[in-house]
Length: 80
Image 1 (cartoon, one colour):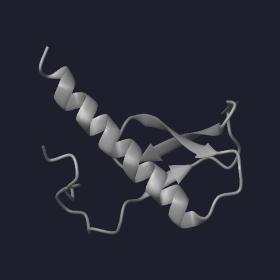
Image 2 (tube, rainbow, N blue to C red):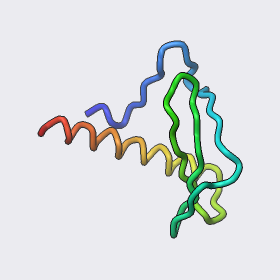
Image 3 (cartoon, rainbow, N blue to C red):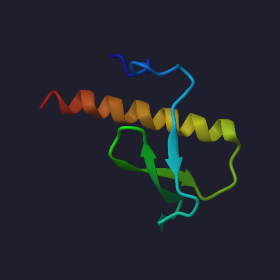
Image 4 (spheres, rainbow, N blue to C red):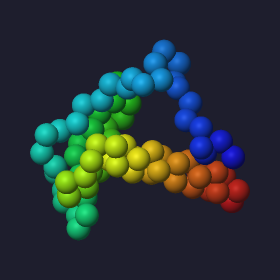
C-alpha cells in the first residue's frame, strides 16, 4: 500500500528536514500540547507533543505512526 515506506522529497537528505517549532504551546489538550510549526516552503502547520515526559525514541515512534495513519486515511479517502 506504500504506507510503510516514507519517501524523501527531492533535494532533501533522508535524515534531514528543517522546521521551526514555537517554544511555548498555543493550545493544550488532555494528552498533548500544540505548537505552531513552519517548514521551509510549506504552509503554516502545527506540531503535537505529549504533555508527559517521554523518551525521545518514543516521541519519534509516535510521529512516524501518525504519518502512517494519515497516509492510510488518504488512501481510503481516495476510494470514495
